[in-house]
Length: 338
Ligand code: CUA
Image 1: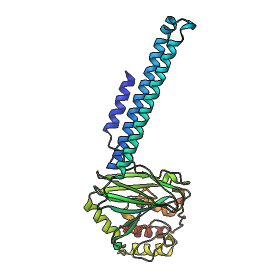
Image 2 (image 1 turned 60 degrees about the vertical axis):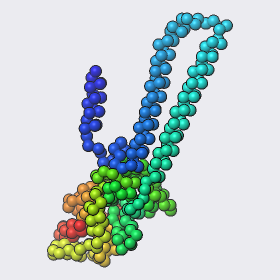
Image 3 (image 1 turned 30 degrees about the vertical axis):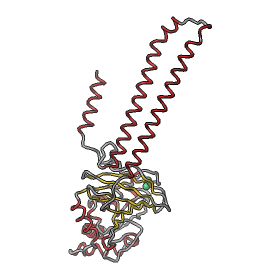
Image 4 (image 1 turned 120 degrees about the vertical axis):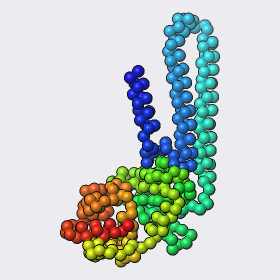
């Protein structure tokens, strides 16, 4: 009884909790819903098989003593039980084949359903995997609307999203469980993933293919928001950075441009045009740094600039021994990149 109470408590707390941002069982769009249905069907069928096999074993155990008593070793009458064994094996094979065919059919139907997403009015994003962060290039029919960002996608609710996947170095894998299944990013090849979010929310994706030391620290946030909010966000991301107004931030910009920062980072509208690291044009508009690992606030950003290796060992960003005044100025500048 205690076990039942515990199980009920766990089930109740699981159903009461809000859907986790990285959860296959809480579909936020049609693609994830198809995959969820396949999972439920597979689980149901396997549970049925498990119960049947376990039931048959228990019945056999229960009947074994009686059968042994009744059918004393009479070597002349072996034909009868053998026929029964053949019948049982025949049923077992038949039911297994039907079950496996049902799973195959469900799989084929799911694959077809996944391919049927209408692509009218789609948002096109080229997503490039790097060790260990994500570069997102939003692409429009009108190239003047294009922009680049990193580690945080925004998408409009109710509109399809076509993600073209490429890798810059090794194999990565994109997996946003609330929206779709996994898709690998293989160097030298292009893969495409199409999905749609029907519920607003922030969904978390974790790189799903081991890609080196910081594989576990390679997350991507997907923020699904109403279409007008998305459009406003995209228009803002497309704009170049505004020049800092106050003196401290202006000094910070000089620190940024005088240091090695510009070798790797771009700030659109300035001299900084490095391509090796994430685009920082609108860094302050993102909620996290270091590929979804730390909140984007002054403390974490300062620690990250000074000593990224202690926060994410192996990362390509070098440590920066800055004077405290320079660091404060640099942070003030980065905070203007909204
Ligand atoms: Cu990228 Cu694992």
